[in-house]
Image 1 (cartoon, helix red, strand yellow):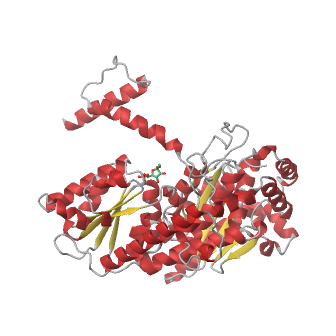
Image 2 (cartoon, protein in one colour):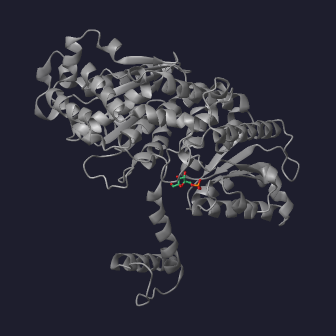
Image 3 (tube, helix red, strand yellow):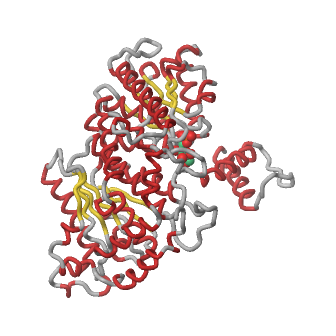
Length: 555
Ligand code: F6P
């Protein structure tokens, strides 16, 4: 059977029985009863990443029952569908073949895994794009591509939002050690023009390149910021339209819309329409990454993701890390009803990673309609994901993590090859991560003298968490880490019987914004006029009072 409500399966019913048997067990007891627990519930990924999932309220039977569930819902069909080119993005009728974007050495083609002609054609298009990225990167970094006033480009401004910004921003922040000298990166997303002017005020038009990233090329934030940057360049070059080709690159799936801006085809990178924004870091949407770390390192980023593609497609489910992370997450979300999830990164360079995963997780799986067009009302889909920097969050929301009524499973992530241990700061960073993971899991039991803790300062513990040790934050491992979570999201979406690849949920807000905008722009709001939408007293008075505050402010 395919596309079934998971709660109707026999395996789900057995998991419920199993849940009632173990739900009140303590994580610390799992360790006391099994000295070998860590070895049983931890795996090395490519020898570069250690996943420790031993501090969870689960045992081998839990994993076995979930594996039965995967078999019962025919998970293998979905996994093979990716490679065979079936359109798993069933609402938009599109491929879900992100693995093609990073198969830079043609592993899947050379080993004859790809039979679908459309995918073979796609792969040629993808290879051409990679060659174009490589050439463009070389031309910029070697000073062959100059500004209109014949200056070397040193400032790159990536203008985009959501998947056209978060991936690039997160990856560049994490790989600052690989920064090409004389390249300064800037990012603009917000429609609040303070964002773009904070950048423009720091740089000069004569050595700046703008990369305008928008798959649809209709996103209002990006088009507005594009228009501001375009005027900024034209003002500098006294409205000489020819200057645009030296200072603008467009990355989009909407060639026709892009062509309206008088740029050469050489300045336009086209991305296949089946690639979702939040899955697009391996495409020309990652152009700024290649400029920042060089094409060789950009290729390593893709190879790291590719290594997880192979892990996901060829590893048995019980040793398949994305699948295990997905199983653990569903165990808490759908059986324990822990409906939040937390990503805690302990390295400054990973500080944007939780933000990136928010879009990846919640824009993919924040859905309430299943494959069969039914409203989902008997189980939860995506958790609410949030996150932050480890030690800083320990002084903000860790109180709730330890003693709140909500139990929030966490992923702790840290790099192990530190570059600076001054005053043993790195050991202190690691000791914070490890002690937080321990005390969340074991509570006050961790200390022999439990009398220290009564009532208000008692720590019940039993707050589950995974720990990911990354040997070194480098392009390869960042690519692996992202792909790991991409496939966790994929696996959860299949189990939840939803489409993880569309995002209709963002459309209503966009539509209403375009309808409300004229009401704000006009001087007087005519409330008796017939509108083709429900105009409520809150909206009317918010607009009115916004204007009153604004006018007062101008007095
Ligand atoms: O948030 C909605 C969304 O469509 C994302 O899926 C996408 O990454 C972002 O907006 C930007 O869209 P575009 O790349 O079309 O500008």
